[in-house]
Image (tube, rainbow over the protein chains, first blue to last red):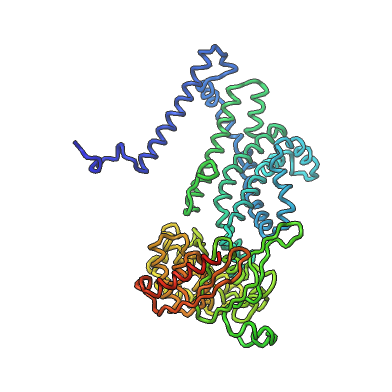
Length: 280
Length: 280
């Protein structure tokens, strides 16, 4: 008989590697079970494939429309990324200014929180309407998708940045006061790095929102992209096509969020990070 | 320093003398707005700490010990009276930031900086603001010397989360010594450590004090710790805090682990416990 302490193989022992393996196994089991349920339950219930397509139907449809989808990705992704990056830069810059000036922050906070609570996506038709007024020839309705991405992603990212820059304990504040640190020094040496984990959490949510903004913008403006493709599929009740396009969008978002997560875990070595944002 | 004494009025000179830390007629009332309920934290505090003296302040929870220290650090302003460091009002424009070092109950080491870089933080801030002279190399060398003085030799490249609580507190102490302040203000610096680490750091602190000749104002709720370390122990009454005792500790120096077992130590400790009970 072998004593527990003498086991040399990693099997059955609680090690980081085994915990990771268990997590992966469970994830795969979860996904496979879900696909199986989706594949067989609609049939058992006697639902029509046209209205309730199975994974196999969706896969077949995706294989059929793959090339046009591939062509439609760049404009949508570009709008989302530009809107997201603008949101990132603006949220850090504006957050830094607001945090260094208590009075302006207090005055603007109701507005910021208010706009963040509003379903900003409901403004899509208005934004497209206003973009139509811009009297510049090379600008067209496509700009509305960029504006939408920015409009939807910016406020949660700004709030994340403000929360992060402000999340300093009393002792650290007092220490900076004793050294006579200026607002800029406080930001440069403490607030910015301290806020980074919050900013990364904001980025994970922000990119998903930027994608939603760009796609819904296309829904309404009907400019070329994955969003307008999905919209036309939905309007023609081509359910399997709509689902396959939405899956592609989800895959793109997930990939970018994963990239952000990897960047975070490299950059913020002093703290654990999580894929979904918030406390791990 | 002669320019400061020149600006003093004769009346000031009589109250502050040549003491390093001087409270005269200090009151602190929180919430002075008529609408708020005000809290009288400290009343009529007169306290002079001579250069090179080690003075502890003890008192029940909420008696204003920390308020007293924060006023000495210039973080809080007294409602009435004045607080001077080396004859200069800490809240006045002539106060020099490099005069004071502050050590809190919890370590304030920044998680993303190595021990060495944490120690250098005040130097960076004070130097950028023209509060200290000397080139960075001088301070870098000094950081190494101090790290070995506090027993952190070889830990310069470690990150704070790789160190124990006691070691992190040593980092904070090093940080407050790096720019050679003449006054060290310590707010229950060992309050969150286990008894053994605390005793060890008490000895270390006395050694550092002996080698660096600082004036130390030390806040604690541990009466034995106060007796062991100090030249004088100040006892505050419950709120509003008022100085009710000022006890000379005539234990011989250098004090060692054996001091705690000496008859005089036990006598003084008993006396302070008694004073404490009768006033609290």
